[in-house]
Image (cartoon, rainbow, N blue to C red; front, side, top):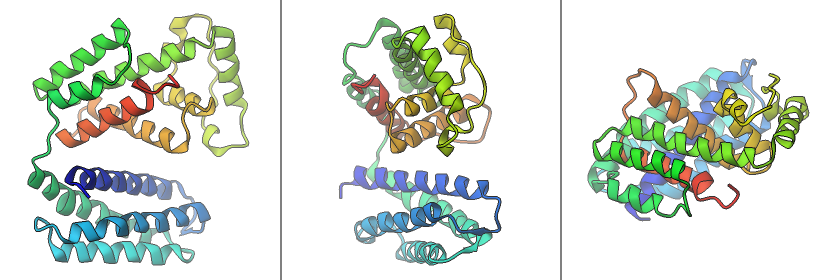
Length: 275
């Protein structure tokens, strides 16, 4: 597997581990019994096993670290085979997240010299068909930020472009239909994903859509079938990164994550024929 592919795959595993940790924290029970959560643990070790062989042959990585990571994934699998206490899961996840980020992913990035350059972003953004002047303005400003190593600002502007395109797609339904779909989602109580949306919004003009939080608009895109479950999770991850970059915090964004972030936005919205 190519170096960039390894980096991307490790980023994907880290993201899934992060979502898994969030799902665990939402549980109100002392033990983990939900079949879907336990099955996700088993899926993640399969992803790890797919990578392990390629990682073992890399001289930049410590065999001891890889062996410890393997044992932790096996421990996670063993926990998933029964109804085991939540704190045991949390302890394994904490160690996995730290080891993969600091002891495996970062050495790979340093070894390969991977970095996001304005040229790479320019090539990626060039795949967006016929961007409108407003969309192009956001993206051009994002590139200016990337040229000046202002990665957090680039993330925010990339999201502005994405939110703009989502807004235009939703408004293309017509105000009456858009109002109807928002009301339908609010009344949907059979599917857990949509139960968090309980607030009533009135869409009487195009400006009213700007009063709805982006998280709910992304959820509405899932409700309308424009995203599947995996795309929805990726979009929420992109929004989480945007929010992390928009508020004072110690989080440091590296070039690889910036490139992955824009690749996701381009694939799922900016160059997606559904939008």
